[in-house]
Image 1 (cartoon, one colour):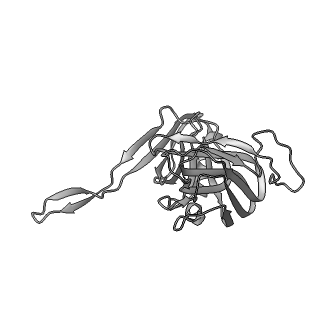
Image 2 (tube, rainbow, N blue to C red):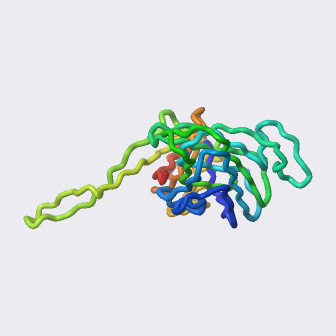
Image 3 (cartoon, helix red, strand yellow):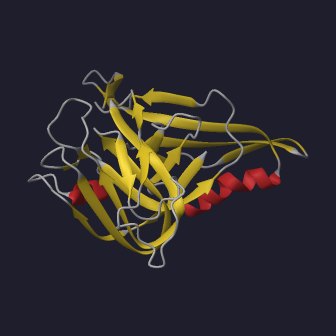
Length: 255
């Protein structure tokens, strides 16, 4: 499993093209995934992100395109490093996003050697998922990854939640009424933990508040299973014996 909860703020950005009302800022505002960036064509598009500090992860959600070229910071293709740290001279690494059937979109988490200040990626000319004449993207998240080596007990519990509220009718009879929105919850449970394993989830709880959004990637050979989530319950654990703990963490899916 991979988490990106050390999220870096994009200070400034630039896109080759932006349709009116679908500016790049929409995608950078990742906690509002219903807002989208849209290009003006399916010709090659270049996205530049500037930030302070260093990052090693880039998450793209809600895209209708599958292929991306990392122009700065990627190690995937075995490219050599230049003294100034940029690959803008034509060097690049080609990445493929994963298809998430549940959302009917492409998404993915791209990991690279830590890079400072700036990253550039290109969306090459290609067909789109629905045959649109433009590219779309609902969220861009950059930051630094945390890898949790011990996977959850299989299968991981993911379910559709249907929030309801309780109302009282004029007859004073209570009734549950659907709020009309739906979201998925993700429950991770692990067994056979020792203290060092247990601290992994505890560290996430200490770093991430319940209102903070972060990236969770299942990392189980399905590129598209990258989710923007929030915690919805406190971290929990259970001691079976001196060296055998169980732990768990519950999250709600934002995107």
